[in-house]
Structures are given as structure tokens and as C-alpha cells.
Image (cartoon, rainbow, N blue to C red; front, side, top):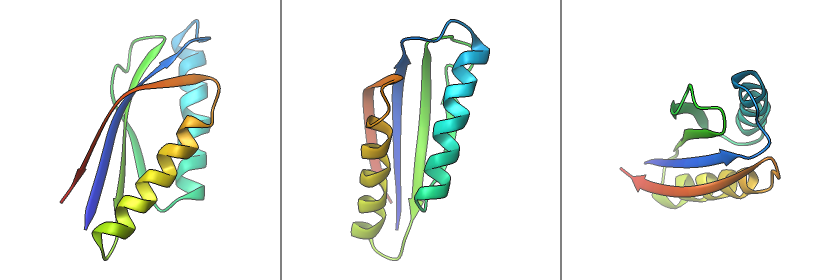
Length: 92
């Protein structure tokens, strides 16, 4: 089963694309290392304080892939640099 979470975030302290990408790179790398997920920036690539990310998990059961995405989203919420705004979760 495949579970995908797409969400938007505001990076409040970012003053440039360089600062935004530094925050994104750090968080995306940690997500990939800590959880069995793939992560990509899918929108707002050229906005300084806004981004859209997608997290995808593939597992043998829907419950397992959903659990991994939920854990990854909880990890995303633990960073004070940004605020998660809108989230859409789909399972296939």
C-alpha cells in the first residue's frame, strides 16, 4: 500500500531562498534517515517563506504505511522553524 501526505508550511524566520533551502535540506535529510519515507518539495520552490512538501511511504499494509507517514508528520511538527498549515493524506 502507498500513503502520500502533501502539506504546506510557513518558514517564519526565512529571509532568502538560501535560508529556506538550508532549513528544508536539514529537515528532509533527517526525515529520510529516520523514517522509511521519500520526501520532495512539490510547490512554492521560489517563495522565501512558504513551501509544499510531499511525504510518501510504501508498505505491505495500509496501516503500516499510514503509521509511518503519521510518525514522519509528527517529526515535521517538532521543528520550531516552521508551521504546518494544510495537509492532505491519501492512500492507494
